[in-house]
Length: 149
Image (cartoon, rainbow, N blue to C red; front, side, top):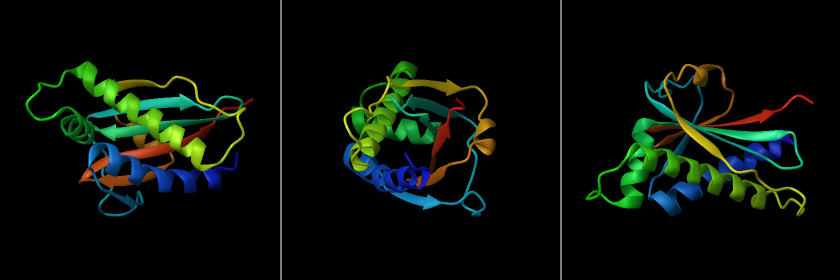
């Protein structure tokens, strides 16, 4: 897969998924934009593309993930830490699945099971290259990583 094609698919897919699933609205930003920020608390999810050297890594601020959870589960239900991780992991799965579909890849390309966690330190966001989105004034980043063979 070509990196440019994946980036295009990510830019098209992320806004649609957030609007349809979480009723949240995206705005792409670049890291040198004054609106860019690095969250103090964040979540990370990654998912490998089967039969390919690429995998997608997703980063979201705590504010974003809590907003996703509230919009999905409702305001009346207390939200547990495991719910936050699961919701972020599922969003990675949906976005990655839509990216693969958007790319119209043959049936040999699929996705592995995503993994997600809350990061104790969000400093890796600074070194991770990717597409950054401002989603309802919260941070979201998608990095496309190629594993070395």
